[in-house]
Image (cartoon, rainbow over all chains, first blue to last red):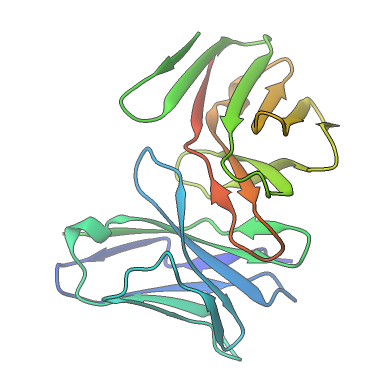
Length: 111
Length: 112
């Protein structure tokens, strides 16, 4: 079991570009959570998805951010027209009723 | 000792001593709690969990204590080692599949 896989590990984007972050949950897990972590801070919930459904997006900014978890393939967190304030580590976790497992994260730097 | 810096609170302990990291949680309806360890540049790593019908749970060198009356959680690490140096987060699960809510975190620094 390869665990939760996130890619890329590091992503650099210029202001105004788009960032796409990918998360493949653990095998058999159908629930994915995305969190954002700023330096020296805790993880803040963004969005919770099941296959083909957004269950809770209360932590995700209404503009520029979107997420999907298609029937096939990884979950994608998409940030359009990135700004410097989007620079952070983005983690996803998959859940199987009993445990949450986190990926290693994608560190987004907006220059 | 323990101090509150500009950002994360920091706990410094001597190698071999026991460490106690505290956490206050917010939701009295939370029924599941987890402690995570996060090393620099890595994702949170599960350490130990506890359900609300328990007040103590032990793992290998770690113990979690839950006091529901005052909504307080603690992580005790016995015989702290340099490899324990990391940021530790508590997380609460309000119910079922709802998102985990993370605490602020405490940086543990082990002095060799």
